[in-house]
Image (cartoon, rainbow, N blue to C red; front, side):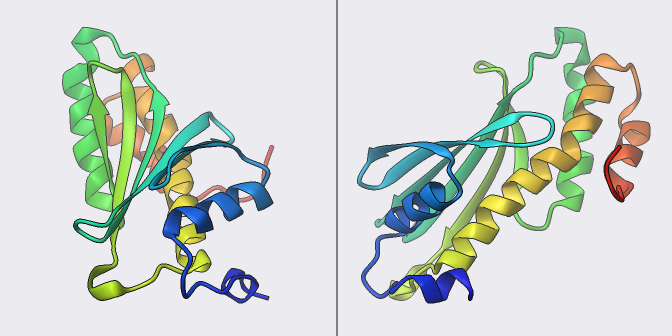
Length: 166
């Protein structure tokens, strides 16, 4: 059975759907406001802080997935070059580095204009895509910052598909 079949989504607020998904996945979460939820999702490399917020004004469900990253000042140009390379490969969402907060951020906005309703499968895919992107590119960012590799070399790690686990 698909996630959509488990819910009657006609009148559900998108954040209500996110809360149900967080509960079913046993993620730690906090319903910050009626239109916002924050949660922690455990990945292989990091625990990712994910916030979803609904804006009725522009009918957009915004996702922000963050993790801490504290590059030395002299590594920032290479990190920004790596970000450009990563974003060239990301078709859904994009990364940015919030320097003041020392956070790597993956952002995506699901536009639901015209009264469209997000279903649980879409929201689950939205969260899954954010975590997959963060997991995929985290090693490349680390290699650029701490491994003294240039962004082109570091991206080879992200491009390579891993099969199985060690």
